[in-house]
Length: 382
Image 1 (cartoon, rainbow, N blue to C red):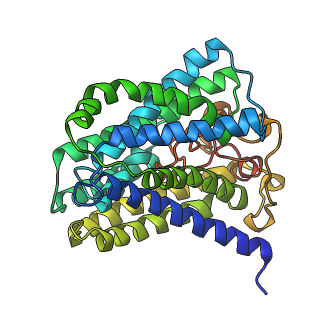
Image 2: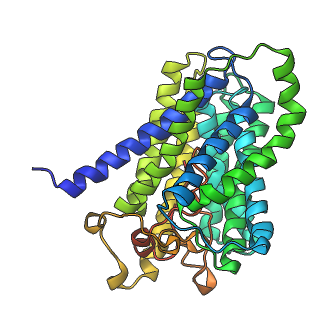
């Protein structure tokens, strides 16, 4: 008989991989002119934000699943607004990339995420430059360059959009650590959606009004309610599936699942979208980049374990079921999710955060109490 806890752990991992891959492929299918033909990435992102914000409002204000945090105007203006701005930008640029480059190549470019976050964290002073990490980042960058060189349908515009989205997300992660940590604000996934989604919706309205509204007025854009409802629902479900996975597993398991998901997604995208052909140079370049990412993850996990006392180390299989509590401060700690043992003061960096770009609302704040103990001070990319 398989252990019940182990069964649910693998089940949640399977759901996470399924939803994460599904959301990416679904977005590509909706946006691509060759398929559903809804080439309006800002509009699609606004639908996601509006839906997520509405669900979060009902969960917080109506059903009272969690309590809202003590949010002052100062905190909202100095923390939530800038974080929401970079969050909206990362989604806007990332979704726009689907119009120009393949899903497989996008996944390969996303290997740059640790590089971008590490560089931003070092510049902002939340992480320290280290030779071993630097060489890993160099290896990742070389791999991505080789993969790009081998891309058959290389598109400069799409690549620039994707890389810009990656750096916008890196800035958001670092801002989340720097700004929220100073205010001592703790957000769980529901309160993150509650505060950030509406603000991101407002930020997206300006580029939507200037860039996509005129297109919608002159073009016959098809709008299927069930398509967009199911798409937004999948994106929301992905956020919560990541949350369940964090509560069930440790850092190593999550990172291995992320690597497995990337390879599955690349393979699936070439089957579902025949135009997304990949070459051996693509594969070799991505494999090199992945080696750098794996080595980087190993260094980070090693640093965490070295900084832990034996009493703090909790095996994955001993992780208990996690349940929502009424106090939101007991759920997530976005301002203290660092596993960089080399950082002073225990704050660390966000450069090794294992987040999923399709569910970034909780990517910087999705370490549960159990996960926080397992990872000491830092956890969670795609």
